[in-house]
Length: 300
Image (spheres, rainbow, N blue to C red):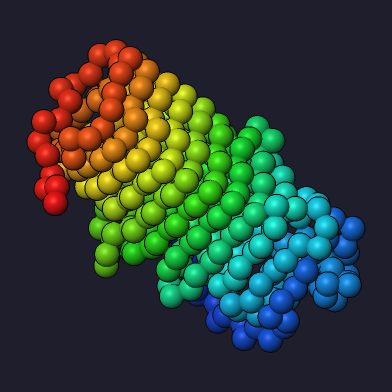
């Protein structure tokens, strides 16, 4: 996480909430198509060409669907909405964000069935700046330079990522609650997620709670990094071929259950914190490591 991202998010948040939000009164369901036009009406027979135009003309809580395959452009989401790409939609971006989310404190956003590609020049795939909850399902994120999915907040946010592949970049999924945040800490659930080839960490969490299950973390600099104040619970994952499997830092906690941990150059790199096991993990082919945990959490 860089201060550039915190600053940009803070500025954008201030601009967004300093103005009165409009009362959206457009269609509850709009459509886009690779052969559409932003001068169309956004119906299934007259679809838009970009997601941004669709968002601007969809009611809060509405749905955007895809008629035919296309590249629908980078976008800012400023209201609760569902974008359902149906496996037909791409977002190819070259700027700071593929998707930037800046919604109200009680608002939820769902992103489904998209391929988001930074073309090796775009910075962050999805940046969740403000809002209550983000769901990402059945997506592919690749070609970004910095972060695939980022949660950056000073208050409570929820993130659910399922059936999604993230490849490359510095960080696959980052959850970061800045110091001095108010309310609860981030609640993050990752299920059936594949993260590969990151140069910093597949998953990084600070001051948040993160659950990961049935996922693959492979060929990353670090598979799981529990930074200051984080709690990560990892169950039934395949963690292999990383430079470091687990990085544990001060006041963080990592709990492991039923994971396959193979052929990582370093097993555990510890700078404080606590790592615990259910006693049912499997490991082999490891290089150097801090001591593997002997402390067990309660099994019943």
